[in-house]
Length: 519
Image (cartoon, rainbow, N blue to C red):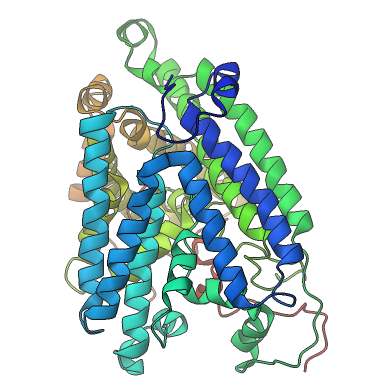
């Protein structure tokens, strides 16, 4: 357990008491502080009471304070990366600034990841300064593309989502730093678009949501501001359950036990499959906790409202990063990754996939791998996931229609595909947790690379059926684990398509309750 940190050591006694690394304790403490600060921010610095200038300043200063508390002098990397990127935006012409910002931000992130992994602390899979830098990198690159779309590109050359997100003027330095380093998202994100964030700070969210439906901004529409209290409480309950499960289950079901030689020699194949599934299941609540808490912080500040659903319920999932039900009950590889790290999937789509005409899928997989870091296990997971994605699509297109003849057959298909999906996901992401080359290859060799071989045989022997529906616009494709491959059918049974839950991705979101009278 790590007992040293470049951040604050005030909570070191608590770290010893709960037997967690000090940097993880600092992270959780700062996020809980951010939650309280978010409630205060919404109550006392509401846009109706305070100018957007004050809201930007306070959000930025609080964010930098949290960064300093968690990471100490390492937080300077956040300032350096953000500042140089802004200088590039201001100096380089809008025609090419997105390229320079992309190369610099991603390159700076990669250098920091290399230094952290191979120079300072290899294998310490804990809270670290490169995590926030990954989010800042997403924000910098997204904003650079959005500014270019809004100032340089012609409307007819943009996709509908690019037009909605286009930024029509260069942000001020304060607006930019507030977007990159605000207290709501500096430690764990999630990514949000610059326009959504500035709209929230300026208090124009309700009017803009109305404009998305009505075609114009209704400044005079008197609509009661929705309260996030209930959804914040719900998400905090999910956080508590996830944290409790993680604190207990991961100690009982360590992923590393999958490569224990005695376990491999003495256990039957069904036992090993069952343990593999439950050990990877026990590893996921860590992400559930962190991402749901980050979502709750944004909601508590009043950020994240995107209208009402078909039942008239408030929808606060604008920046949500996952759908737990969709993950755990997924019946296809696609459905699983559609509901995992949703905002990263959108980022990969916006800055890479839909902007490349030559091998966009391969480039998106590569970008995702580089962005995640330099642990070899990441690259093994992405390579395996790409095979799984392509093979699963072939199997689905060739087999699924045979099981649609009756509800009974469809139920059988769903049960079979759920089992296959959970096993395939566990097999795929094991190296992501094991990190290093040796344990990762030891894991795959203990399974004789069986699913790799099956995937290759499927791709070679099973015909790739043509899709019934033609696409008029590229759909988002993002690499496995953290991304969603969108080239499959949109008619996925029970698919929780939360990847498109961002308001800029959903034109059909109703701003007003269905029962409200039309204006």
